[in-house]
Length: 485
Image (cartoon, rainbow, N blue to C red; front, side, top):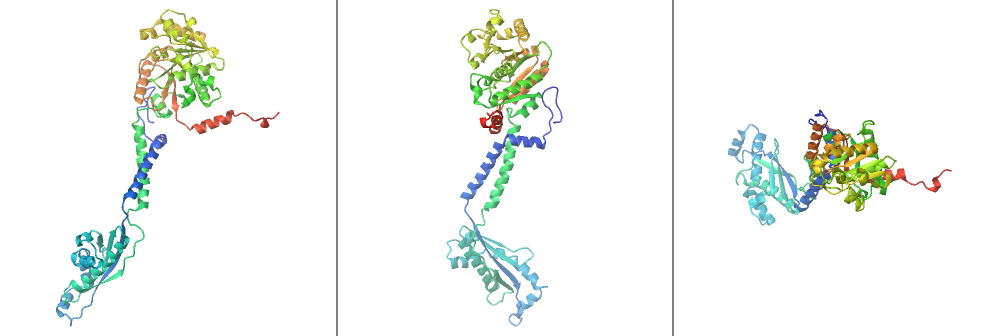
C-alpha cells in the first residue's frame, strides 16, 4: 500500500508479490479448475489425435574417381573443377528435391504395390541435406510403422539407383557414389503426438491460465471476498468473523441455544473486541448501531447475537429493532404475537411509553424493543425529537444499547442514529456485499464525520475442520480417569 485518502478507503495501492499470492490463495479453486480443464483438454487431444510413426534412412554421397580412357570427354569436364568435393556438395543440394520426383518414387510405388500417386507419396516424405555435409536423410511418416519402415528404405534404394545408374545417362559413369549408410529401423513408438511434452505443456499452460484467471477474478470481482478486502475498503478494524454455520439459522441466538459452540465463541470474541473499541466515557458511549450496505448480509442476526453475548455476563442490554420498514427482530427471536402488535413505532408516535413496550428476553437483564407496526412516515419519525429522547433514556438505563437498523444503501437512517451514538458496526457478507456499495457508504460516513467502530465479515470462509477441531479439544470433557483428586 502506497497511500490512502482520508479516513476510509484506499486510492493508491501497489500490487506486491504478497498481494498476488493472497489473490491466488483466495481463488485457489478457480486456479485448480482451470488447471484440470486444460489438462483434460490435453488428454482428450491425445486420445483423438492419430499416432504418427517415423522411419529414417541415411545416405552418404562421395566423389567417384573417373577413368579417362573410358570417357575422355567426361574426364576433361570434371578436370575443370577445382576439387571433387565441391562438385559433390553442389550436386547433393539438389537430391532432396530429386527424391520426391516421379523418377525416384514410381519404382517405390511399383515395388511396394502402393495405392497412391508419386505426389501423394511425396507428402509422406521429408528429405534433407544437413548443412555443410554430403549426407541425405529420408524420413517417411504415417500411421502404420511397418509402412514407414518399408517406404524409407525403398526410397533410399531408389534414390541410390537413380543417381548412380540413371541420372547421367546409359553411356556415362556417374561422378557420384551414393551409399545407404544407415537403413531405417522399424519404429516402436509414435513420433507424434509427443505425449510427455504435450502433458508438460498442458500443466504449465494450465497453471499460468489458472493464475491469470484467479487474478482477473479478484481484480474484477464485484463483491467483497475476504477480511483483507473489507479492511482495505473501509480502513476500519475487523471486529471479528462469523463463519457459515447452520446454528445461525435457528430462532434462538447461538449464545442461548449452543453456548459451548465454536460459533458462540466467535460472537463473544466480537463483543470483546467491540468493548475495547468503545470509549469508556461519554453519555452515548454504549450505543452500538449495527447495519449493512444492503439486505441479506446478516445484520439482524449479528445484532441479536451481539446483544445476547453482551448480556451473558450480567450487563444490562437493550436490543432495539430500528428498521421500521422491514422489522425482523421479533421474527428472528420467535417472540409471541404481543411483540408484533406494539413497539418502537408506538413510542415514536406518542401512543405508548418506552417502559410499556420493552420486553424481557432470555434473562431479566436482556430487554428487546421490537419495531411494532410500520408507520407511513418512517423517515420523519426516525429524525424526530422522540427518537432522540428514546435513545437518551436507553443509554441512561442500560449498559449497552444495540440497534438493528435499515441497510445504508436503501436509507441513511443508520448514519443518523450512529451520529447520536458513538459509531457504527458494519456487517458485510462475503460474496454478497458489493464493493461499489461499500465504497459509497464509506465515503458517506467520512463526509458525515461518523466513526466506524469496526466491521464484521459474515459467512467467512475458513477451515471448519481446523477451527472446530481446536474448539472441541479446548472444550472437551475431562474423563473421570484423568481427574486428579
